[in-house]
Image (cartoon, rainbow, N blue to C red):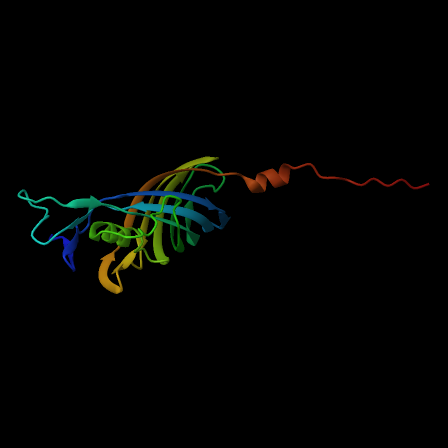
Length: 214
């Protein structure tokens, strides 16, 4: 499939379609199980690392064997957000069981500690690199799905996250916005630990008040 290419003044951007990157996800969730159904609200952190984005001048670059010099860059998008899933539990909820979940979540972009600063007097290359690394949308809707096997405390699951809205819609260079759409789909293997809050609360010592009467 041909790469996505964006022509800029005296330069271009080029990225492979369906390129591979990396994703890291951490989540804190509460599972509420009743009659085989589970409701699971969650708070999450998600970091997406892109594949290569190539920058060059007209007549250079390309993904073929005979390619000319170009500059390769990439970006990462960090998000925090809230989500919710619903699904079925097959087996005893507090013992070994299989669970299947589907849901959605909203991710807000957060600024990385090593996010680039706008160069004071940028060259064309620096300006394009800064435009790529700051082009991410502030808000994204995501669809999630999960199949997991849980024991009494530990569990392992296969989780998919698909962006319902774009991660990047446009690249702003100077005073002009150029359409350059980037979407993301992540497939992850996760390891989790279940803290049995209900059992802990039930086993906590209760204070009793004794009264004596004369």
